[in-house]
Length: 132
Image (tube, rainbow, N blue to C red; front, side, top):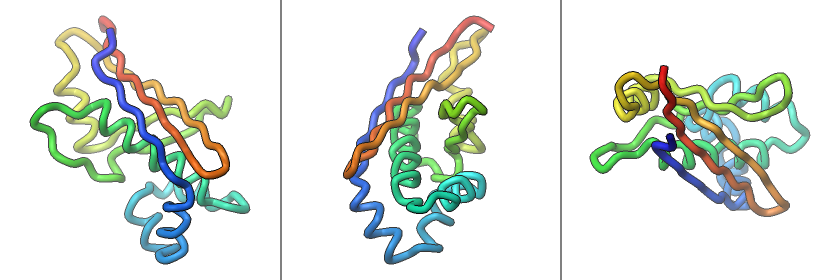
C-alpha cells in the first residue's frame, strides 16, 4: 500500500547560483559525503546536485505528517545501485519518521525517480508499506 508520495521540481540555474556563491559550504550543508563524491566527479556537478536536492525535497514531502517538522538535509541520502538506478537511504530523523508512519507488521520502502532537462531537475518519491 502507498503511504506517502512527494514530488519536487528544482531550477538548476538557482542551484548553480547558490553553488557558485558557496562552492564548499552549500554541498557540505545539503549533501552527504557520498553524494558530494559522486557529483564532484562530474565535469559539471550542478545538475547532479540539483537532482539530489529535488529528491530530498520529494522524500521529505512523502514522509511528512501533519505535525512533522523539518528534516536535516543529511538525513535523506540519494545513492545509485550498480545498475545506476537511484535509491534512498534514510538516516536519523528521517528514518525515525518513516518508522513512525509505517503500519505495525509492515516494512516500508521508498521508490525514487529522477530526471533533468537543461534548466530543471525533477524527482518523484513513493513510499510503500508491505506486510513484513
